[in-house]
Amino acid sequence: MPFEIPHFINGEHRPPHSGRYLDNIEPAAGQVFSRVAAGDSRDIEAAAQAAQAAFPAWSRTTAGERADILNRIAALLEQRLEEFAQAECQDSGKPITTARTVDIPRAVLNFRFFASAIQQFSSEFHDTSELTFNFTLRQPRGIAGCISPWNLPLYLFTWKIAPALAAGNTVVAKPSELTPLTAHMLTSLCNEAGLPPGVLNVVHGLGGEAGAALTAHPAITTITFTGSTATGAAIARTAAPLFKKIALEMGGKNPVLVFADADLDSAIQTSVRGAFSNTGQICLCGSRIFVERSIYQQFIERFVDQTRALKIGDPADPATQLGALASQGHWHKVLGYVELAQQEGGTLLTGGMRPANLPPRCNGGYFLAPTVITGLAPDCRTNREEIFGPVVSIQPFDTGDEAIRYANLTDYGLAASIWTQNLNRMQRLARAVQAGTLWFNCWMLRDLRVPFGGMKESGVGREGGLEALRFFTEPKNVCIHGG
Ligand code: NAD
Image (cartoon, rainbow, N blue to C red; front, side):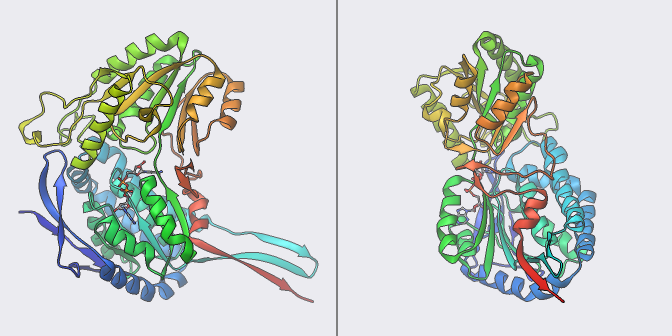
């Protein structure tokens, strides 16, 4: 029997006002396994009221007191890592090994990191003259609205709520309706850890209903969003006339540039990982690979060999490296792009179809074998639009200028991975490639202190480290004159 996932408001699990629930499907099986509350503006209103009532006391706690609670949540989550990993795997279709080694450990780390960061946080002091000084008082902003996507459900949910809470805000959060389970499970741990009622509220439901109501609520004056660029634009349209503070982390179409002087073994191995990790559903995945012509043929052959060796199958199997896509709608979208690529003149070197030999329980699941396409123009739609699945295109380039031009051909600007041993070239590319994160000779090497975000249509604002704590606080300049 599918179980029900309720809201979490004022420290309690509550049914939705409407009484409606949405089917929650296990992507690997294509079967309903739970039902999630379909929240609307009435649930958002109740959550906002709880968050407002909790704010005065929570905002007056010391950084150390908040850090203690966040660290307790982290410890409880770590104790139940396996239970959360199993839930994330079932809810999202991601391989259990990814959930065990990436998603849940990173959620633990998000709490620990911001518990520590808030205790190191300081603000500016300006010594103006002998009798006058200015200092910047940073206060929590109030209620933060945190909207997160399905690809890294708990990982990105906690990446938002941890800094918001650490900085002394209360929160109304809306996880993706496609992957609500681990955010729901976390709420019980928050109670167990002693987080006061109303400090964190979780309202589930559709983006156009619960998400839109959250964005429009006048008391929720800070909005942090991770998801698609189209949704980010809708949120910005609502938030702008209400003068809300917003941070938008959106789509990507990230280039990988491989120069002939690169360490080819690492470049190929890492690019395969960068293309297909989490079944290609990470905003940072490198989905357009440009290779210097002299090594192009060799690169393709070895890349395709390594792609074919990847194990796609039941996400619950620890040996599986690629699981299911997160939903039927998304699966159709990705398959549509494989078709488009062929219409645009692309050649499929491998993949492009449902893998054979899936276990019977996965017959109704949303699987696509890792797909490699060549022969596309760098500016075709397949190479400019975000696919967000296990689909990568590879094309040659002849000069450094051409590589830069190809890299910058999309409206996105999230990340790039560049392979070269030449330091002068690195310096030039670092300035010329339009992306919020540039990885040289690596991919996805994360340090949580660095600013994280995108340029162009990939984002507005930065998350991570002090940037996040600055985002969730209001700077007030205080000028004191004496004498
Ligand atoms: P999405 O935009 O469809 O949904 C994201 C969240 O927004 C969900 O919780 C959804 O319910 C909510 N939402 C939808 N419509 C809304 C509306 N009108 N008002 C308010 N909320 C609304 O994105 P998705 O399909 O869940 O996630 C995939 C996308 O996320 C990809 O484009 C990917 O690149 C992007 N992403 C970006 C980053 C980053 O850090 N830049 C990280 C992960 C994913």
